[in-house]
Image (cartoon, rainbow, N blue to C red; front, side):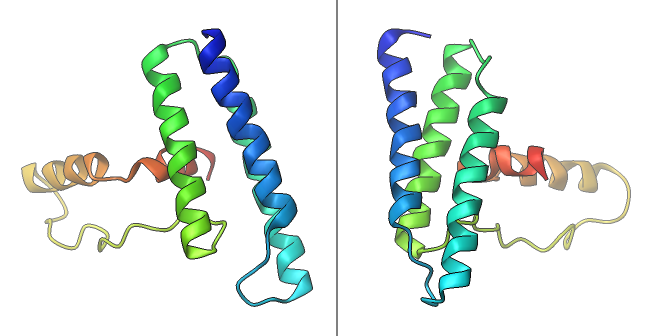
Length: 122
């Protein structure tokens, strides 16, 4: 990891914890705010620790882009949790054959960047 990339990653990590410190839930309830703050901190720790040994520059860049996207979406919608994609599960494909494989491939390609690591942890 280059020094510039390292500084960018550490800056994102600090930014996430600053956001968690100032976070207010949409409902305004104290219990919910505390729960969401803890989720933000735990999610950041888990994902950063999971990716700490990544050395491929392309993969590092992808992780940075995912982090930035999740921060922006969380701040915009005031929801710390990843937003789900709204596609019916296998709604158009038959249960077997080429159409099913093709739809699975399209579903994988169309997954937003901010959900890439979320499914790996779930």
